Each structure stands twice: as C-alpha cells, then as structure tokens.
Image (cartoon, rainbow, N blue to C red; front, side, top):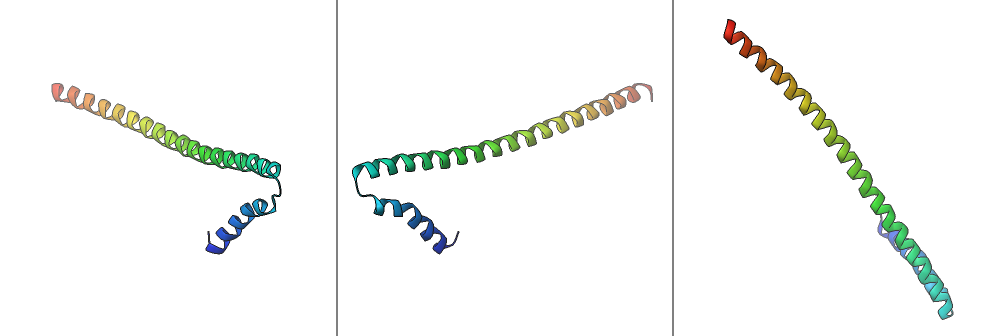
Length: 87
C-alpha cells in the first residue's frame, strides 16, 4: 500500500471524528470503530484459520505419503529377508 493510499484511508477514518459535534456522536462513532475493529480481527482470524487448514491438509498428505512409502519399504525388506533365506 502506497503512502498516499495509507493517508487517504487514515483521513477516511478520521473524518467522522472531525464531524462529530456531540458526545452522542462520539459514542456512535465508538460503536462503529469497535465494529470495524472486530471485523478486521475476524478477518485476520479467518486468514490464520485458512492457513492452518492448508497446513493441516499438507501435513495429512505428507503423512499419507510417508505411510505408503514405509509400507512399500517393509514389503521390499520382507522380500529381501525371504530371498536371503532361500537364495
């Protein structure tokens, strides 16, 4: 995000504060800011949850692949053990 975009976003958020004329206006703004903060927090939480889900899926795939590889190696080992007894 560029500096001008950050400043524009900051101005957008601060503009209502400048327009507030009464304490009631400020209380309404407080509720709006709380809601925005909650939404931003939930968005960050959802992004983190999505990353965790992707990592879990990746780890599950690795575990499945590792298990299959170990099973194949066990079969190969068993084959060598059988052969060493008869060969």
